[in-house]
Image (cartoon, rainbow, N blue to C red; front, side, top):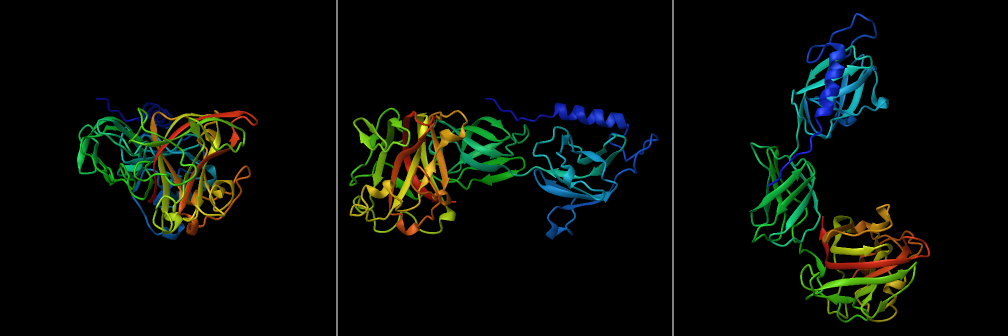
Length: 417
């Protein structure tokens, strides 16, 4: 089993020693050099940087938080260290009486519980007692939320500290502990145990315990799993398969060669459209979710084998979509604002693929575009969200070129944040 924490401490310790040795004042009170220069820096107190809380004095703060160091003769300060971690100084936030600075977001290798303040000529080093607090683990997301028992789940976040005296632990729903395989400060790889259920994941470190806002194997707000929740009844239900590539039985396939901004629909063995008509499918009358879109996330699992252009359009329409004037016009027109997934465009390579299945998360507030090729702004109408269509359309990676596409989709859901 391999465990490690990425702490880049050697270089920072050397830099601190060199700076301090040149001043001859490491770990000492401030001393003034005989060689001249301005008056030595003085720190009167430290407070929270929020001006509405200017009377909140502090002697400790979390990594990554911003504080204001208040004192005198601070204008020549060009280095501030918290333990052995050097902080970034923005000269615009340094005056004679104030330094506004963010505590480094790295675990210290040597803990002295001191701030070291060094001036431009390194003649003056001021040591100020201060405790940097390491937060409890922060859980942001999982690479894939639907990992089978025995598979390796990847949890992403921060402050994942695997202390030898208090090892990091991961608990899956049902309070079942997983076997941690690898740890860095912002990622955990853990083997999913048998019997893990549906719900939040808990991570415990020496600095605290946190439960995830996201769910493992999230089944809330499920819209399409292509098994019992399928696209039957519409004209173009899409290509559905169940084979060795399956995540969990049936899944949707979008596959083929698509011209630049072409309006292709379906063809034998593949296609670029999958419609869910709420009424024709027998879904309850109404919309696929209720509440404020700002409170919801649109999620699905995707396995991208090849994607070199075109956008995945997430098109919304009324529940009664099997009757005119809707039907196949749901994705050809602007019945409602749509969302776009265009992962290849952000890689800088003009292509995108995954390592197996991954979880895609799109805030419902991003359902805000008109149809292409303009994809202009449009207000999403949650009263017209009883039907859903996936449609590949939009620009190719190379204008005028063809897009090679093979994307699998499963477990489409709308969940509360």
